[in-house]
Length: 396
Image 1 (cartoon, helix red, strand yellow):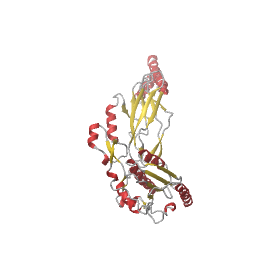
Image 2 (image 1 turned 30 degrees about the horizontal axis):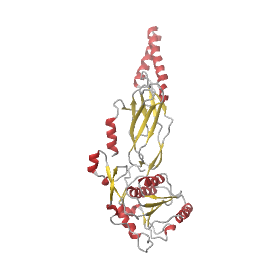
Image 3 (image 1 turned 90 degrees about the vertical axis):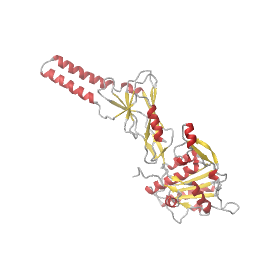
Image 4 (image 1 turned 45 degrees about the horizontal axis):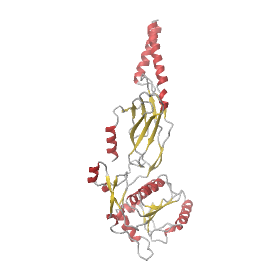
């Protein structure tokens, strides 16, 4: 989906905008030749006492000086800004837009825009911008890790009017974007059966179970969103409408769930694998459901989310998981458990419970000991066929 969108943009982009190779030196190749030729004329003119050659050499050096003086003079009238229309996920190329705006009533001659954060490693040659004109570019970025990603400042380079000297200035904006955890692939129907067999007893003394036909109840079609499973795409409608459409399924009312995400102790690669697993379960459950979902994040900062399971709710939980850290000591972990227990006491608990942990052991989270809550880790989920981990590409 990302590649097709990028290909479409490349076809529609103005032909005047072309890719350029980066040059960090002030003197461009033509400027080097120009300066050497000027110095040679001055040397010969002075050495041979030929005033005309000396005058020509000094004139060329003066042109070089004025080029350096004027190269970036009008670039201060340019305002550039990045826009991220969709959430960024670790390990997945994301598309973003750059707005170029001339904020003054003066024409800006051609110049170059460099974005070091782009995965393409190249920049663009921008044509002349008229008074108050706006220009839009589109590029891609490949974030490798979750959390707050600090982007490089956008760089503006000018060589007007002679193309001999290149001057660089940087945009004042210094962007920071949140990268959500890397997602794998879960099988919600298998997880439902797992929870139903081991879930807590309801008020009638029976084990709370998910409705067996819940995932077969068709709700409608909607536009494809980043992260949706390709298996949910309705290809016939997509071909007719010219954009990807996916099936939206609705669960049977009453399939409420308490999901505990226990990040444990210590920040390491094991934690990254667990957060990817937890984010995948939350994302997939919230993509097609409308039931109540309570998510408790047990980490250095305890957080609890209690809303209807839908796409926006899943994104909210993933935004909290993106910069989350595990507890650094046993004492901090016990304190987090105490705080979580206090928060749980304030809630009306859903009948079904699932606790995700970094490792599978016999110890249970203290506030859940009175409930028949199933505990699950990424390795066990993978062995049982509930979960497929994402690619390890980009991990250190």
